[in-house]
Length: 422
Ligand SMILES: Cc1ncc(COP(=O)(O)O)c(C=O)c1O
Image (tube, rainbow, N blue to C red; front, side):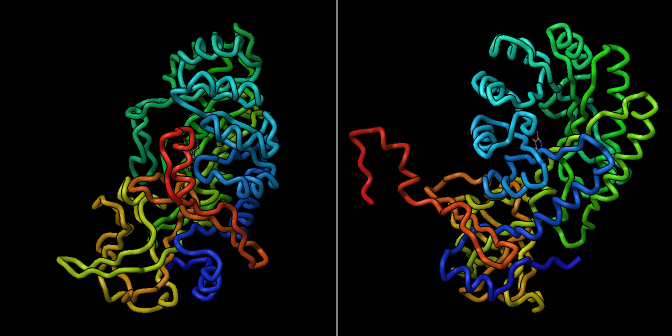
């Protein structure tokens, strides 16, 4: 399917009069339409709640939009918890799915009343020692080991991942947690990432529903929710078919009716922690071509770099690129599109067929709305960009300003003998 940017050349030319490139731009209308679709796809489940994975797009303005749909936050750290709390999410709307968790993060999660999702069996003791008790509502993360397969092949390798508890540990954990005072239980699993397939959630749900029926029978624990976590993917490449959340919701519903309802567990709530599916397509990185270089290959240098979007450098991830104003021009050139870091993997595209790029052209790097800005870092002293929201009425709102050198040097403020001139 042809990937069409949600922003035009004219609009970008208008935006750059006020905000210079590079910047991340988010599409409010797209975010809202998708959030509504997700809500409707799971409306059959009374307790359904999406806990948006804050790590994907940790921006208060984005979280506030999702809050309007009744969604919660899935937090993985102290600062993510702070953000959720400060936006008025109550404990019930905060899931704390962390791993290798520092004591102060459990303390703060408990303070804000978040639902704690334990990544490991040993965290039962750790949590109890840290906060002095076991909360009444508690969740455990499951890892079945082996590989996770769908009809189109192996999707991921849980046996090789650091997360979750084995089945034996999970059963033992529920018994111990119950003895220690827990009353409501949840099971969580994240077994495959970026699944561009409508089968993932239904298949995972089937596996988890069978598991919780067994868990209830063996431990007598009251299972309140099954958390399908994240992993629902988006089509980064033009040849991929997008997932259909309606079909996904129906698939989970079918498994629910076949497994949980006959077991007398028809009141179990379905929770999700999607990040990518909620935001990735509704964000893009807008950057300008500033250099061209002709050596053994043809290079286009842009004013963004891996600090703004790390996925291509980190995993060789594909992000589609559109040259604004040349949407329909033939792709006659083959370029590496590079950033300015002193790292040869700082390339947004390698051997990519694109229309002829002229200096000053604006490039839209697609699908950066999740795990895009968020993964940024500060190598080479590069500064993070602004984040902008293209509002439904067409106006653009600054939702995070670009960093300045002052931000970069802020952590030296406490030293009397270091002075950075501005
Ligand atoms: C615990 C947890 N939940 C949810 C997510 C969101 O995953 P995705 O963005 O693939 O939906 C992640 C992503 O890393 C995660 O670690």
